[in-house]
Length: 439
Image 1 (cartoon, rainbow, N blue to C red):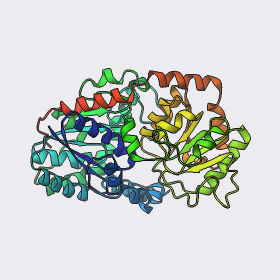
Image 2 (image 1 turned 180 degrees about the vertical axis):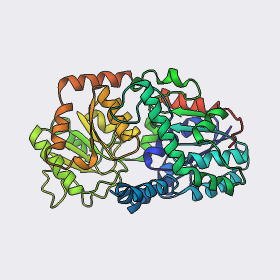
Image 3 (image 1 turned 90 degrees about the vertical axis):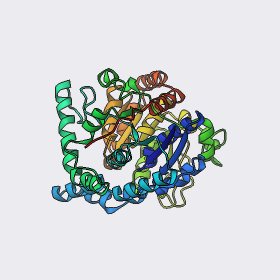
Image 4 (image 1 turned 120 degrees about the horizontal axis):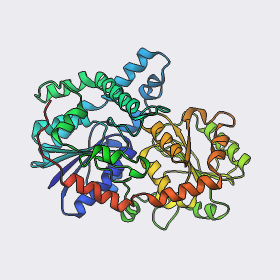
């Protein structure tokens, strides 16, 4: 089979799907890869010969639209920003995916993530192709996982999801039908989840069933729960990040060995509003609790950040700052994690058996915070509050006790191993139903 990967969004949206692409290729399938332009180098290092697709996700996440307008106190401006972000890059994704399909000739399936799924589904419908989607958190109506923090009960949970789907449809209906019109398709009358369900499209749930007991039974085989997806050792070594394989960034191994296991702090692709304030909060928490911290810059610009940051007052013996790191190599050498609650980081932290403080921004991140809290292995705070006096130290104090650590280790041991999760996702994608989508 020939699978065309249409992957947009941040690294957390793209990298898990690349693991599935590598597994499909290992099995003898043809894999054609399109990724967000800023992630082309990542896919190139994995040997997937990618082409740029859609828009630069780092630029979008750092834009005023995301950092200012989506957080505006004015509801009209906020709704306009939500509508704009929901459909950002759809024109570029449609034209790029069509060109990619023209270049490869014959294709069997389009494989996409959640972002841009409306466009990928319309293109697949227009070309008569099968489709599969990867979801890194629950995003369809169910009675098990609430989309609203504190909401309880299967009936209320289902109703909240139904409301959320209607709101999403209201935000994206015009943009989606504009895309369909450009493709010569009729207007969609119902939202995408219903159309995908009715067409029998496989929506792989790429997270662990241990965190959402009962969800697999409710959804059945068209939404299989595979476990968290991750690259294997060979693929991680190809990326050459700090901590990949047996080698650590120069000086990091010595720092890790020269003291107790640190707390890992990293926010991935999320833009930290005040880097020096965050470092000061981390340093203060470490001093108060008697721990060390390893801070990963992720997509943030910690200029000259080697050890402490000049002018920050951070003690580099307590707090070490590095660039992007290989979670699988570094996290097992830590004792807890502070992170944004992205699905990929959540899975890596859980696999390492660490308790966590989730400093969430938006999207699925509060949900992961709630799920970790419900499992007794984490707490959640809004990311913007972590720089307030005492907040980070207080949150860490809640997860650095022996009982929480023991629960985290036990939960980590129950998770589906990464190789089995990737294999299950590849099984689902390669067996995708090719029925025609319709509006």
